[in-house]
Length: 311
Ligand SMILES: CCCCCCCC/C=C\C/C=C/C(=O)SCCNC(=O)CCNC(=O)[C@H](O)C(C)(C)COP(=O)(O)OP(=O)(O)OC[C@H]1O[C@@H](n2cnc3c(N)ncnc32)[C@H](O)[C@@H]1OP(=O)(O)O
Image 1: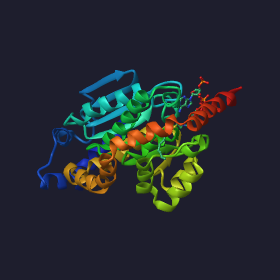
Image 2: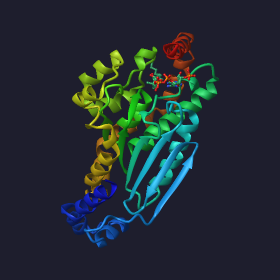
Image 3: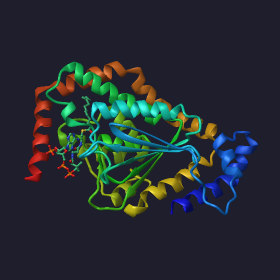
């Protein structure tokens, strides 16, 4: 199957996209190599590099120009300060790899894409810790939302709150068709409020009315409902998520990078600038909001409820 997908990738880049690239004199080293491949054979993986840190496994296929990043923070891929920090470091590395044009984000543990922000980072800690944590959350969103790479979320499990934000920060979302999985910004269910830039990212994806409805009720959508409302772009059988991501990637990579990147910047920069203009104030707001006794109590009760569900 992987070979078939690679053949599709080669065919795609040999088509109109390739012509566009040629006319703009924009062929990257990776694409040159693709062009030389005879179409009857699968693409041999001659250059593959992996780097794996605590909580993230990154695999870069230089021939395809695609990196796959698997969140690997058992049991639920909660976004701890450590995971957020490593995520940002690895994203920067990939961004600097000229030949890496696409990134697929997924989970190493099927069933949970990511449980969102690590709640234990948000209660019973110092103000300095909350500030550091929030800065890391901001940093990841800023880097991901404005990435020069094509970013595809291969959502192979549940994806509440911060997990949903990671998916929304990408360019395209493919979700596994399993009614047990849910996705959405469910902050209100925890007694907290989605920050304005989480909200903006959702509004940019599904529009104002649907966002207001989803945010006020803290809706967690099944894959079918997520597709209907537009939170995800495609729902596919569980075992087809990765291959579909590669296929979709080939379509996006057939567009000349500079044109696609400038378009992405044009669409997203106003949203990003809103946070950049008030980044420190946003950190202060978060620290003062999360430190409130009532909010600390809500988070504590929510964690207790999560644990009691199992008993
Ligand atoms: C005035 C305006 C001011 C603005 C201020 C802004 C403030 C906004 C602040 C923050 C925004 C918040 C964003 C978030 O992302 S909050 C996190 C939201 N996440 C969730 O609600 C998901 C909760 N988890 C689940 O629903 C489930 O765990 C699951 C569906 C992900 C997986 O279910 P299952 O496989 O059954 O696993 P368990 O429930 O048994 O969980 C295993 C284990 O993991 C712990 N855990 C789960 N989620 C989290 C988490 N997000 N953080 C930390 N720990 C988590 C769970 O408690 C279990 O622990 P154990 O009992 O010790 O094994």
